[in-house]
Image 1 (cartoon, rainbow, N blue to C red):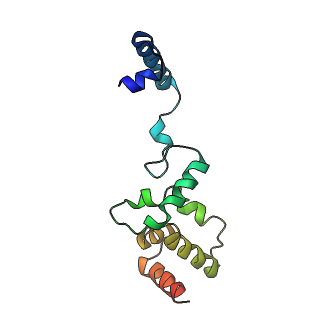
Image 2: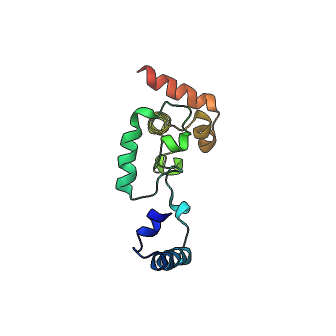
Image 3: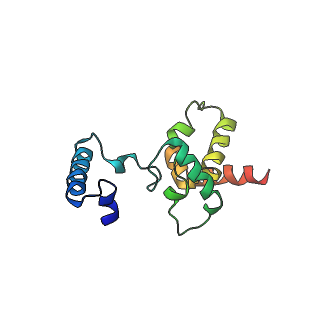
Length: 131
C-alpha cells in the first residue's frame, strides 16, 4: 500500500487524503470499469486490445484459457453476419467459416444464431476446410 499511496504524495497524510478523493471521484463517474472490459481481461483502447490479440495469437488453442479471453474483441455474430443476404448461401458459408476459424465461435453458437442445426454448420466448416 505504501507504493500506491506514494503515487499521490510523499507525505502519508496528504497521500491518504488524495487517494480517498481519487476513489470518490472514480465512484462518481458514469459506468463502472468492468463494464468496459474486453474479453473479460483487457481494459484499454482498441489499439491496446489489438496489440494484446497479437500476443495471444499462438495461444488460441490452449483450452485452459477461456474462449472469451482467447478471442478478446471478437465481433459479435450479428455484426459478422450483418449484410448477409438470406438467399446467398456462399456468402453465409464464408461468414460461418470465418466465425468459427477466425473468431472461435462454436458450431452450436453459430447454429443457434442462424436458426439452423449445428450439423449444418459443421458440414459448412468441414467442407470449406477441405478446400
